[in-house]
Image (cartoon, rainbow, N blue to C red; front, side):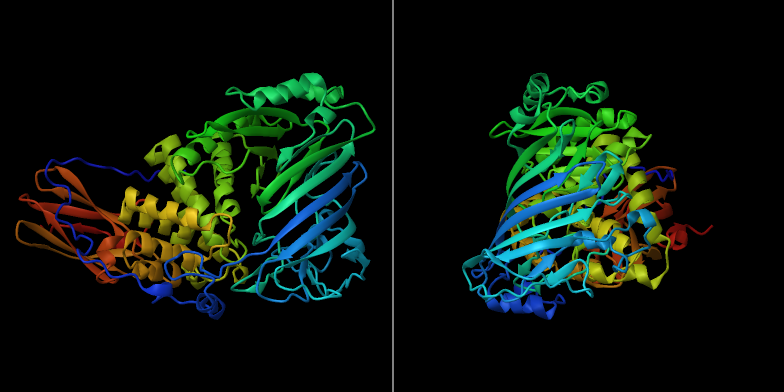
Length: 640
């Protein structure tokens, strides 16, 4: 890691009571995100009353819902996964639905599918094959449009009226991809099943049907649904997955059932199944096949991992002190992955810290399972992570993915379009928990290295596109910068400016108002304006809607009253906080921290007063994690 040290010097009586404060009279929040660009569809949602100008769901807010009953058979070494499902889809909208959109995400593997990058032969398959379809029990032809890949419109025989429901019955099959990424074959007998079932796309109040292609770059957008999923596998396989395992006594041998049950209340890691036990086929019920049944309510997706040789560890952790509720933490991995032997402990720490500190909302699910794979990817109650030699980095990755449990899953964010609302927030949380884990210096170094330095050093116009730019319109590296580092820096700057108490109050209000729903950026911005009582649109505009970057420069230093005035130019027009590191003539030093509030009156120039009776010898602007694109103009030294 690059060694960029953050020095904090204590100098009695010198800290910045005299720095430019937030204006005493706060601007009144403007309704509906006034002063912020708003797409026409979003503006229409406000007019219809589905979104409220104060950041709350509107009086006419609605969202649709479905109940999925799915049965899947996966029998390695046969690569073909076969499934059947019944979907009861409820139309809670005021609109009549004639042509619902069905997502077939695994058609990303078909030759010719639009992708964000190339595809090896091992990645390609013939895609998802719909064997039959029935609507309300009536056999219906599947359109099978050769020009569409990961989504398909389905014409209903009878339109679906508002506040009515329809039952869709699918039978389908597909071949698991030999090349594992977010899903596929981790090895010949270990598969990660994600996006494996036909699903109804989101129909929402501001965009209508989600007809976005899945390109393996952007991520996902799902309604909150109820699921009953049965997975039939060879008898010696274990299945880990989203939701409650309904029949552990039917699939596990008594010894392993007892370990599993004990792990649900255990503080220390319990090895439920070792590599040797899996090899002797003594873990599961002895039968040609076993069917593992899982159930979950009001979640956006289900994913599963199956293996005949993965080690299984588990423990639990208290995530809600008011009820003493525990969440299970499980790990499934190859016994060669040394870092995964610590993974349950890493998961316990992440759930504990995130539940009790930031975001400070108890983990909303019953468990999480961290699987050794190749994705570095989050799912509801599941994580698919690579193995690393560096256990500190392994923990770093796991903490980021587990942070996604709140954003996007608990919050229902459209991460395909507004990735900065979930990736940026998870990266924000990653920095906070990393600081608690490693200390400010090491955490800041890691954040700069992995999240900021590439953007700071890249003058390409692509990477300075506004964060609000729809993520499905971005390519790398603009997508990565906008979704992760830039957005997280904005949240961190806001926290720094508002202070922990005000920021926490607004963040918790946003979570309380919108969990289990579908918030969009304007709901977040308006909630913060509403709860803080401040019109923060100047901040939102500069950080999220403009083409800015971080570049501060010392313009002038001059004696002023009982101290010095320092004029700082904001060359990049992004309102970042900054430390003024000063050295006095007697060799003593001090740091004057400036929050982003100094840019509220004038985004381009600010004057900071340094109160001191000592002569000023030199001054350096240090942004820390808010890395300056051009540091050559960040230093002033008194002329001899």
